[in-house]
Length: 168
Image 1 (cartoon, one colour):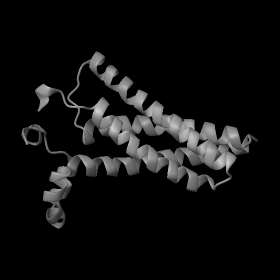
Image 2: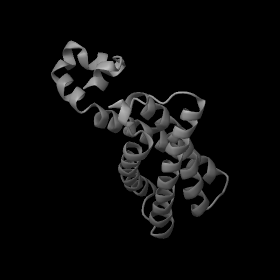
Image 3: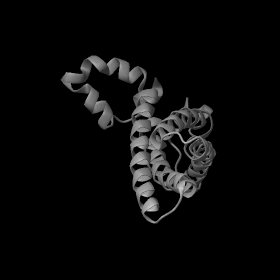
Image 4: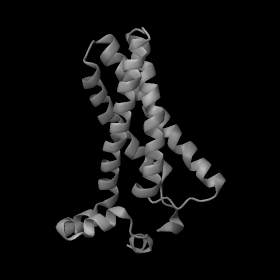
């Protein structure tokens, strides 16, 4: 509770405080972290899908085969999505208090390291589903992203943005 009291209201607090959404405000405040993670998880997925679609189109236009397209489009979308996710998770989901260049770089390295692990999971799923089994690209992408979303939350919560004992 002290943490919530110390945190300055942000745009999301102000939005749920509007008269039309006030019925939702107690639920939002009680479940803020998970709701914000899901919201930004969806937004990160949008970033991932849009950049993957653009990359897939351009790579196919360049005449690359299925294997390079599935791997390279996933890699390109990963860089864009992880950068978006780090910023949003740091600010709105986990309300990181880490400061200073060294602390932020360590936090980023931990975040990107966790995401690198889930990138390998996603790339393996894309290769197996799309390239080997011939499952539709987008069906495979959706399944891979559900797995990755869950793994990313667990990694972020337990390892990257874990609260220090002095933080509450």
